[in-house]
Image (cartoon, rainbow, N blue to C red):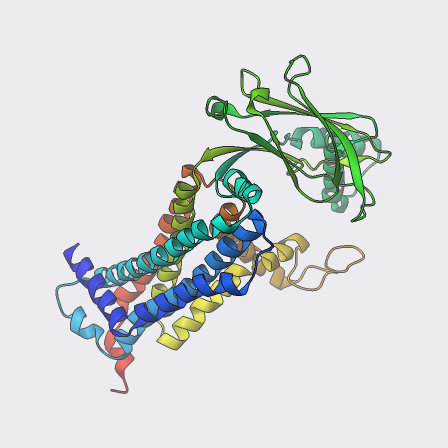
Length: 459
């Protein structure tokens, strides 16, 4: 461990010697302070956090991400190209210790810069929040600068019901093999529509279990977040509905009529006294319009409740960003283990661009081809040989990308969503241990077997 720490210390000294730390610190602090002054918010609590949290943390992540790739590629590749690594390799230090020490040094530097910039964002946000109107400050404390948990109705498993209905239709009318996937999807959507659509003058009920959180919510307000769709929505029209929250037999039944716009999210506060003794919150909606309303199963109804403080949630969110930087450092060092500095930097940026292109990867997998799709049929004219090779690779890429992008700390922080300890632990395992571990093992194995003298043929 002493040898690894010595290499890490040398990496840090090199970063300070090249004034990288000073330049990055000024750029990060400048972005944190100047960007909110340039972009004005709309005076609301959500607009305020959109500027101070979303934009500044995104800027910090982008700057530190590119700096991490550049430093991790340069600290190893340049040492090899300039023959400096030979002064270390001849000492009783294993190659894998050199590699791991450089990775640790980059992580220490990232931790310092991330703590500095994220801390500046936190204190600047607390200071500027005092300028908001009193009612917006209340919204900020209760709905934004808070860690709110979420509870929904469980999505029903329709797999067995879909297969039974599909078999019934196959017996009545033979179905071509090529149409089975389309028919299965159509049946699933029809079954989902039965639980999503509320016809005129009909009622829809949700029973949402808050589980173990019920005991800590007796004195805290609850919020339900709702969204619905209609057949022909217009921006200026609203739709009337009657809400009844609580058990019908309870004297504390909360009833209200609201006229809401379609295809947008709405949040309302309700007292926690409406919870049943077992922690069940019952919500009923009665459609008072002449058109049917559809509440999506995935996000049509959601109950939000206070879970912990914003400060603790902020630390967990910044920790996930640090995990991302650890992965980028491992990627840069792995590329520099067998490539020159310019090629390693180009390769690392290429991998990063592929990782950010998750939409393209998902579209290719959805279409089933990497080529153009016939828009009339929705499928390719005929399968290409390249698809048999490319599609399995794209499936693996999608799984790897989802492991990294499955955690959205910036979005969660700006919307007041809780980042649980379970999510933080899962992010550490998937990003730091699995993905970074794989890249580290590849990088150390290649660097151990590399002939260092072959990189200095021109010297």
